[in-house]
Amino acid sequence: MIDSPSNPTVKLMHLLSTSKGRRDQGRFLVEGIRSIEDGLAAGELPVTCLYNYDLVGRTERGRALLKKLSDANVAVLEASERAIEAASDTMHPQGIV
Image 1 (spheres, rainbow, N blue to C red):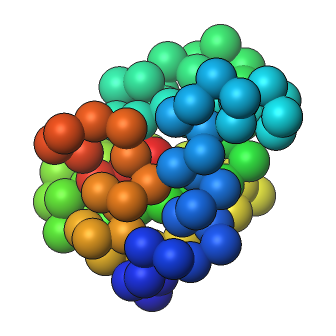
Image 2: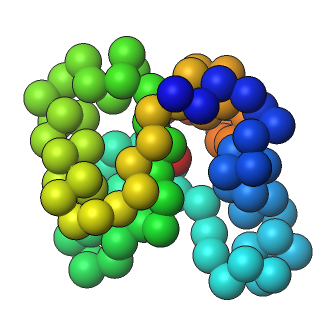
Image 3: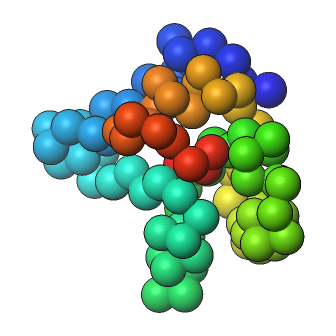
């Protein structure tokens, strides 16, 4: 489980909250179950996904999304709430970025 806000994956995701980071990486950050589901429905796959099971896995919808991402060979990494908050751009992260 990723716990540190200084983890390289967390730092990279946090950089995507800036226009320079998005431009340099050619990526953007998506947060929340619904937004990730919408991306998948549009045929897009995330490169990496951080999630906190206590927040996402408590619902059937969240568990189904984690399974779908895993089945699609997306790098799905469990992270603490602290790491999710560091990677996130929102004040109250939804548990998956």
